[in-house]
Length: 358
Length: 162
Image (cartoon, rainbow over all chains, first blue to last red; front, side, top):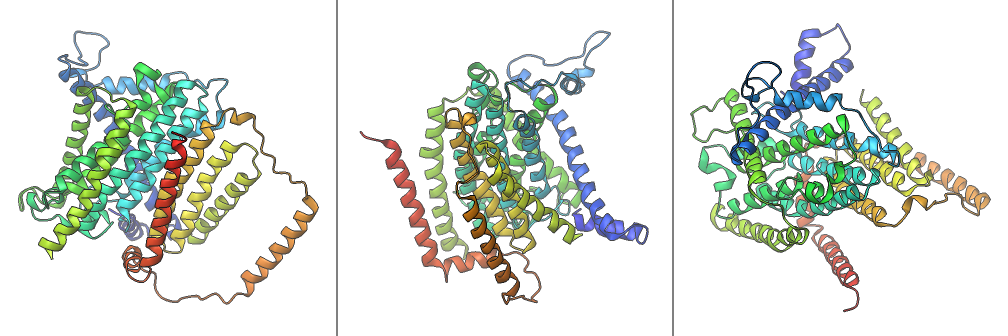
């Protein structure tokens, strides 16, 4: 379902009625709306999952609908809807001492950064908005908009907690981008391409063709990437930028209502993006684990979403299990453990490829 | 259609670049630089240089611009600092700029641009990679060494006296 495909379909349907330029514009607009709808629905689902999983981990029942009157539906299924409505209806406050233009710009920027990453994410063997030649690289690149908007949010709030949060997030994301990128280089080395679909096609042929099982170095690369990705999305145990017990809410302290919702939405959207990259790069993307069983195009969407969903579940699981790291521990882990590991991986995989695969 | 997109991107690049130069608050200039860098990445895509466009965003937006804003944020009372863009030598500067513009304009219009009629390459990554590790290996390694030197230098400087 690339833009080209939609364009061809629209042309065959509406040929002659409207100009091809408008059709191209329409063909680009449709995937945008689809992504927007997907992010919204996904956010509602994952907020519910987060509430329920955290409750079960803490031995509670979580949101439940009981009795008569106003309640959150069966098993609390309407709780995320209620949360979203609450955020929508809240008063939008801009502090009088804030830097107004940047304060308004920051939430939009972070959402755009998360939104345009979805363009290169493959949901199935033909379902991708734009099958870019530099797909993986593109996702890494536009991911850097997030860090910029977090710093801007922290700075524009004109609040010392926000500023601390913004600075911490900048230091953290810039540091963890390096081991994450180096771990993905190993994937690129094996698949020999930056194109997301080609990386997934390389992993055809069942569970043991997945890149994570390609050689003994790959599980290490996967773990390094996944933990770095959690750090990049600012999730506990790496949520120092918004650690509520130290910084109120970090960069999001002064934000309320819709603007806060944008930060919230972007965090969940970024979780999906990094999990989808991990699923496509290491776990075979839309391939079924067993050749020939549930292996059609339609099942591809199921596999991609369930692999990504599982990784998101692991993120939620880690969040509610582990305590927060200190700043020095955070930096030690990144520079003294992950960076050497990622570099050793690159050498190891290069030698392994030359010795065993050629 | 393509032309319209091109002119939009070009206008965005030039206008945000002008904002970077003419604005007298450093933080706004840095934010406007973001749009300039994205505009330049868009121009690269028009030249079928997808990899360079990716590098442009990854290195300049994700690295350099973040460092610039980081530096601005750590500076005390940055908002009270007014960076004047009015120079002392406005007359001389204007004359020099005018003639430089004329010179560039003539150079741009008269230059025999090599226009290739080859079809657009599908992906430049492989070609760039091969060239970097064969014909241009030495320059590539020298740049790496230079960056390593800068990195070590920065670490030594920031340690201070001990």
